[in-house]
Image (cartoon, rainbow, N blue to C red; front, top):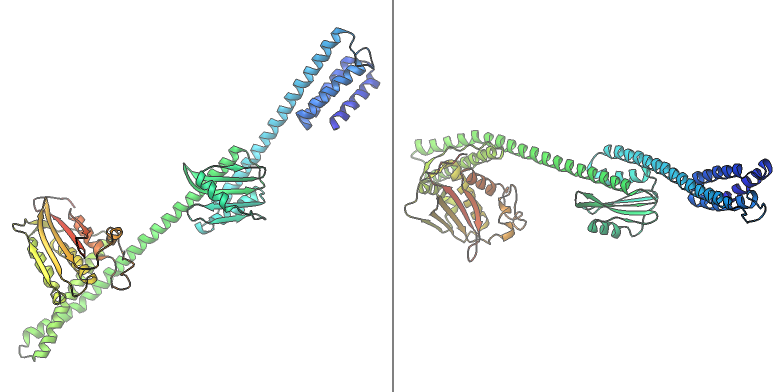
Length: 471
């Protein structure tokens, strides 16, 4: 061992150059032991201390050349020498370790800073996982890196090697939220607060616990930042899409108004000013007039829907008799109800409601239209109006297939259509959404029930006139 060779060299030099001078030899031994502790560590220094004590006894304490101490005072000097050598070795070794730890912490800090810069330069959620894994492998000089995103289940690899059977360890780390580390493999959970959002495996790396935790926190924050940015981008895209749809619908419906007005004016003039028309021509002109009325009503509804979709809905409240607008709505559906049995039930002493008659009629039309589209043409339709505490409820019941429980709320979502019918029945998925928005703007509500037997029952609640509700 080099420490023993150094002690032997010191013994030879001191014995030949300084003679039998115990004081000089003792100090030279101590200097050598300090040098050994600072360079090679505490173990080598302890071995050197024992060897120096034996050499000091043999060469410099009388009787010379024997491992015997004749003078008791020399025992004290020998023990003092040994204690000094051991303490000095320990202190020198601790100073060396602290200096090395400081260098390691500085190096880890530099690596973490480099990683943070690399992560900040990553653009787009699609490349985040792969670029982060490659940056980790490059900056920390790992042989292999595997990063798993718990939200998508994807695993991104970096480094020159591939770790075998690492997926199960990554999944287990995410599930348990614990870290695993052996000689050169680290598998750790990536947590944001108390919630695991992924896991990380690194092969060929040695980090302190504090540095590893800082690395995991950095990856977690960056991963959440990218997810938040992605969510914000999707929300903004959806908002712009909705605005575009509303603007386009508004523009198209207004363009329809001009030709419809001309058609209506022409058909009305023919029926009014030409009483001697042949019966077949008059019948066809009446059909044109009725369908022009229907198209005009549909276009008006489309304009109102575009305004509501753009958050421009404004209620013009007034006292309304429910029976009046219910009759008006059912009359508009006259041609479509020819083959169906309509059962209208009205409770006695119905109170006036506080509503915008046009919007309330529009909501009822959307509900009835929905029932007519989805129920069989051979089945009937029941409309019942009853007085409730604080308002009036209009119930529209069909004899269709009914609505599954898990879809009873979703059918009121914007553009939602049930998978079982969206390719079979035409529609946009906006009607029930608009109808519920109108009801809630009035201070009422719209919901669906599945009554005993078959079919669905839509319930529209409108407030009484005496309830003054702010909109």
